[in-house]
Image 1: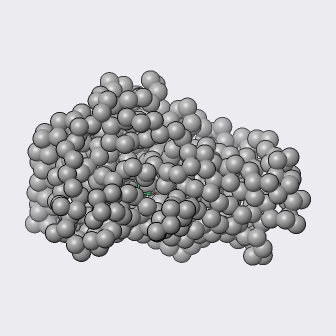
Image 2: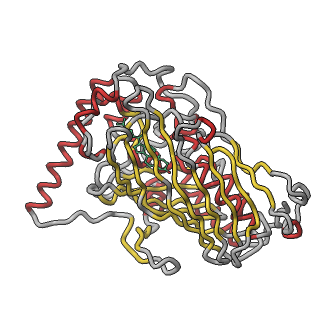
Image 3: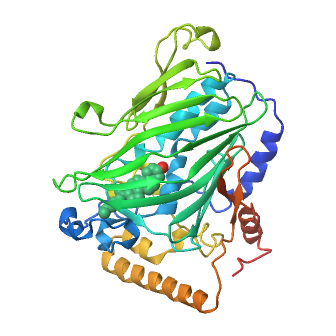
Length: 420
Ligand code: CLR
């Protein structure tokens, strides 16, 4: 694997633009929650769920102790844990190598689901969430643009890539399993350091809570993911094996990278909870210029971060950083930001009764607002995204208007206040 030297000056401009988002993030991400262990009451999932067969998640009223102190918006931000792979992808000279890293990124998004059988807070309509990482050079933003069906529209950007799409989840409880189908397409605009730009797209696979009846609930992820590079015609298909009855298929993911002519160039595989490797297809060794990929030995592409035991709610160390609030961030956050939700904050601090009553209160307020809109013949209009059609795929998507960070910058500089 050979790294291309950076020649593109616009990368520096982009970095400078993104850095305006870093006001408030000076202290670096937090390492722990207020609590060291959660003491949620252990209730049988089946006992509560058995009367809800056929329902989707939005229609289920569950005790707050089934929640974890993240919102669905923040769960989308968890996709950012392994963006190093995108930076690495951009630095590769060969487009099939770039694909290997992009596909590993798409698969890495599932590592955080281990041990997380809990319901994220359902975002309110118009709720937003921002997350920036000066140390990694990216910023992320998402808005809840629809309540029924629940849709969050997201846009993340770094000097070498933009990652955007919608998280629209269709869920249904089948009794045996609770299935969550993400419907939206995800887009990655990669700016390889060797020049040009490439659009990649993929759809997420099915997440499912299994083992509910047997009292051993587990999150599984399965299905076929197709990552496409629209600039070159290369495709990586990744099959996430269902856990099934054989322990050996648990967490397994396998696939291959096909070039524009449909020829297999790489095989990719491993476990989405642990490591992903890539191996060159014999006969194509010349394509990879780097030393370790010359032979057809497997190259380690991705490795899951450690999951120390004893973090409340089984969060990952990355997940712990998401709902942080401090005196630097508070004044610059939009008033709609998840971090300001009192119910979720109470949950995080272990005040479950207060979390439940606050959750009820904010949801009632939202219902009242909706009735008011309906009475006035008004429709909710998202503030930061609007519907558009993507030229490469012909698909509808939520286009970011890029106003959020500008407005926030003005707020941080004290020249403006968040409006309405
Ligand atoms: C998986 C990774 C994707 C984005 C995504 C969307 C919806 C999430 C899912 C992830 C993980 C599992 C999830 C789901 C919504 C509900 C479901 C959190 C993050 C939980 C496990 C359902 C729990 C239900 C019971 C407690 C009843 O990139």
